[in-house]
Length: 167
Image (cartoon, rainbow, N blue to C red):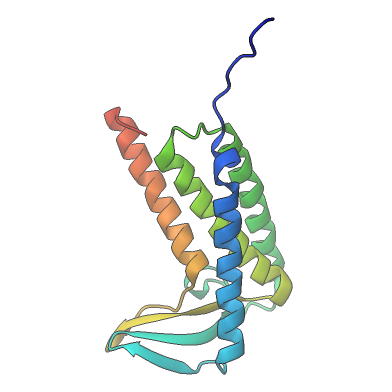
């Protein structure tokens, strides 16, 4: 009997439950915050950190917010295209490339979290507010952190790859 060739599993095969879990966690936190807070209300957690509820109709740092609504569909289209591209990339990435695989999975979970909110509500719920008076960082959410961590991980992967030590 001829033996079947062994195939290396793709990152997608191993990480889709992780992507799904982070996506659902992001949406659950946004749902909880939306039910617990009045818009712009702040709850102080630490001297430099508050929980809050704000709606971001734009992109990162409210880019293009308040532009009449067209940006909802523009950013939804971009988010959908990026999501499809990331799934394809994850399907082509061997699970052995851990840094790249987890980075892509984090990016995908974050993109899906913000895409879902934007398509359903026309805005993204942001709830984490860090500051050092008089300086305030724009409010953000778990999906934004996942996108940042995923992009940072990709930079680390490129650096490791350039050194010949990527895993």
